[in-house]
Amino acid sequence: MTTQPKSIPMLDLQAQYEPIKNDVLNAITSVFESKHFILGPQGKLFEASLADYCGSDYGVGVSSGTDALIIALMALDIKPGDEIITSSMTFFATAGSIARTGAVPVFVDIDPDTYNIDPKKIEEKITTKTKAIMPVHLYGQMADMESIMGIAKRHNLHVIEDAAQAIGASVTWSDGSVRKAGTIGDIGCFSFFPGKNLGCCGDGGGVVTNDKSLYETLIHLRNHGAHPKYYHQIIGGNFRLDELQAAVLNVKLPYLEDQHNGRQRNASFYNSKLEGSQFKTPVVTSGNRMIFNQYTLRCKNRDVVLEKLKEKRIAHAVYYPVPLHLQDCFKELGYKEGDLPETEQAAKEVFSIPVFTELSDEDKEWIVEILLN
Ligand SMILES: *Cc1c(COP(=O)(O)O)cnc(C)c1O
Image 1: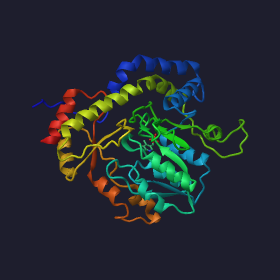
Image 2: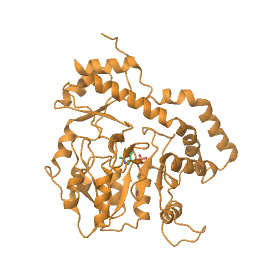
Image 3: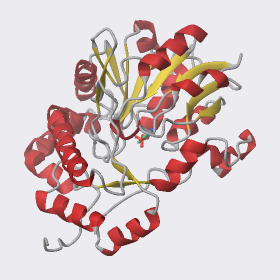
Image 4: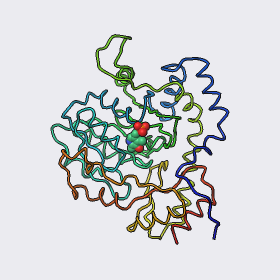
């Protein structure tokens, strides 16, 4: 019996900050001393590094993961009334951004093993109004992109990857090549919210693309559509990543692989200890590299388990308790309970436990002990 630690958080940002503190503070100081706060050298450097890390031709820093999705939709000229196929088991921003462009989110059920959109159920939802598919790479594992790209090609649809939780995830394609999250569709969208594997010190996001003309449109859109300055052929917005955020991201990006590896080690530990228990452990599809932004378990009596974790002060979270097709704000889309049975069942059964890199062995042992007793 291990002794009970004080409490275990979902994420320990202090532990993440400690080893890079000097570099972060120096980077912040240098931005202040340059007095160049918006669209400067830090942002440029980060955009090149992001593209390089992802293996894409172009990267653009933007103001958040949400704005990454919005600007991607705008760049692909998504218009009011257009239909965008996506998952209902995701963070609100996925469908929120679709709705904010005036388009209609069309929800497709998930694969109950990976919690990602089920490609077998996409084609039946395609209509003459469908313009794009927006797969979400939930918890850090990519959706079945090879099937999705096949469908998109057959129906001439755009693909926008919501890779907010999946920077650095990858999949081995049937031709043997390794493809990274965000680089397969027309545009890939990332979030640098502090809780993501690569987090800044506020809000931040990024998009990547291999299409030069889309890249130029994205660059203009994130700065009100201006090109050149004060001349506007298109309407954009203020979707800029600021220099302070970019400077912090430049410090943290070189440690991102370590962050992924630590999370994967913790996930393997949990997998080995929880195998054969009442908990369904994460299913990683063959060829996938999952970066475990979340480690998500599934069980029938979730309430009892969560109560136990709460009592022992072990942080936990449900991503997400209400599927998006059943949210009040989407009532007029006409979905009802029972429309997406796998999504609805998963929403009742999933919960995530701490998996962050700096989690101690002691804490992991303790979490397992509590879960199994
Ligand atoms: C975090 C997240 C977003 C939004 O990112 P923000 O940076 O918080 O705006 C979008 N989609 C998914 C799946 C996310 O997890």
